[in-house]
Amino acid sequence: MMTPLLLERLNRGPLLADGAMGTMLHARGVPFADSFDALNLSRPALVAEIHRAYIEAGTEIVATNTFGANRYKLGQHGLAGQARDVNAAGVALARRVIAATYKEVLVAGSVGPLGVRLAPFGRVKSEQAYAAFHEQIAALVESGVDLVLIETMSDLFEMAEAVRAARLVGRAPVAASMTFTRDDRTLLGDTPAKVGEALARLGVDFVGVNCSGGPAQVLRILQALRRAAPDARLLVKPNAGWPEHVGGRIMYPATPEYFGEYALAFVAAGASIVGGCCGTTPDHIAAMRQALDAPAQPQLEAGLALTREVERREDGRAADAPTALAEKLAAGKFVVGVEVDPPRGFSPHKLLAGAHLLAEAGADIINVADSPMARMRMSAWAVAHLIQREVKLETVLHFPTRGRNLLRVQGDLLAAHALGVRNVFVVMGDPTAIGDYPNAMDNYDLVPSGLIKLIKQGFNAGVDHSGADIGQPTSFLVGCALNLAAVDLDKEVKTLHRKIAAGADFALTQPLYEAAPARAFLQRYAQAHGPLRLPLLVGVLPLYNARHAAFLHNEVPGIAIPAALRERMAAAGEQGPAEGVRQAVALLAELRGVVQGAYLMPPFGRYDLAAEILDSVRAGAGQAARR
Image 1 (cartoon, one colour):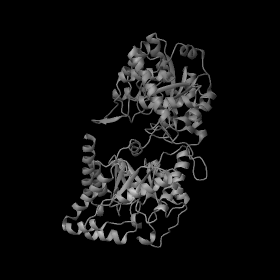
Image 2: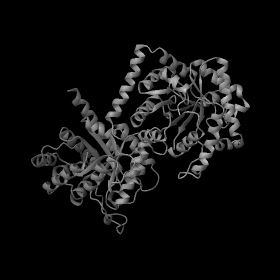
Image 3: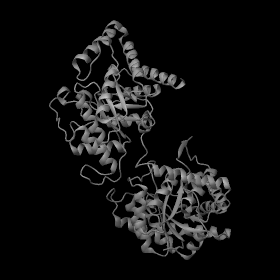
Image 4: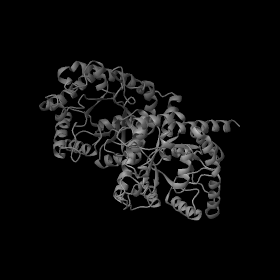
């Protein structure tokens, strides 16, 4: 219910709200453990001082110091029974300061989350939440606020109860603002599009985003809200960047000047109310005031450019940005990945040390095998997640279909995506008969081409195997297996073509020891289906010694090692590892331009040998670029 006063102010142009209250109180010595809201009663002069500073900086809307003034949060300080008094005092304080400044400033009654989880994610029932919100909002409205600002919500169920309470209290417009995590979703996983649609259905007067990250992220979310709720008025109040702990203090990096630039971008994106949240100060608000009042041409152009750039990125991206591997493959870069085996126990320290070595040597990705040779090892999901978190290097998760039914396959895929693992290599997997537990279940519901289709045409489209909605699309990049030296080349060509039709994005091959089979396969594929466009990462398993070469050649299906190489390994003696590295480097040099990358498999966990190959590959690439 928009009031004539608020409508009249909006008709003049966008309104500038204030910045953080908690940040300013803490900077004046109030511990975070204390109740900031109770200061309305115990230290009103301190709160009034901050209101005054924001008004002098040019704010047109002051939010009351009542963000946590509900019975649940106040109850943590033994003040649950004083909710009405604390809220009424908050409004009176703001009104008193405004009157003393003789300025036309509106009062927004700040209503934050209850600080408890609602069912079904907690024990607080919806009616209990509604009662708490009604108590607070009724006190704010009866005390004379111009706007009810329900902010920093992360749960749409909780937001709905707060809005219901505000609507039943009536007499004041309602702004509903949600906060988002680094992945542009709420803590409960809702996208900006879902949030925008939900808030529009609630019929609030302003749809908003506050807190979250810095201005850049919030601008992106604001534009998504605008697309989801095109008829809504928009509110935006970002944090001053992501907080950092420096010398025992919480610091926010975004400068006032930076906020001034983004104030224009927010307005260009359709915001009716702009302001700041955690980490912002009167200086930030003053910079926004200056930019909004008299935007210099360069500032105006910069703000519009920011808006257009975010729109361009949003228009061009899928559910999530492409993985780094996808971008490198699309750019035609020669990509090198290295396989690691999960540890047999629960300690990942040695594996992470090896991953750090490979990252320093220039590996593009780390391939994480899943139960290689059907041996019991740590979950590949956990290893991939640890490497990405600790080493900051993207992984490719090997995803065998063997041993998983359809339920397990889909659940594991969702788990991988939730952990940030979005490159997967689909493979049949080793039969349990050769491993530690030969009697273990060995069944499967999907062959690799079927799993590729499930991922690319199902999950990446937002539906599961049965066609049911999974909330939002995944963004997996999917690799498939390929044997370039298969005995039946026509069958291998047919199988690969089927995997490509299912949606495969790249292929990892069986280990190769000479270039001829790769050229022969590509020729055969071209004869049947035209030139192969699928990026190939050729498998390279460096030979370690003569015995290793003999074993691979005679006992591992799909691997054939030319006699000349086996003879060189025999002649190398104790220098076998170095000879194996030389052979691998020579093979990759010959295949550069034929394949798009390498998939290194270090023998016996010798990551140092893989690092030597990486050094040579990168040096060779540099020389080729200079020619």
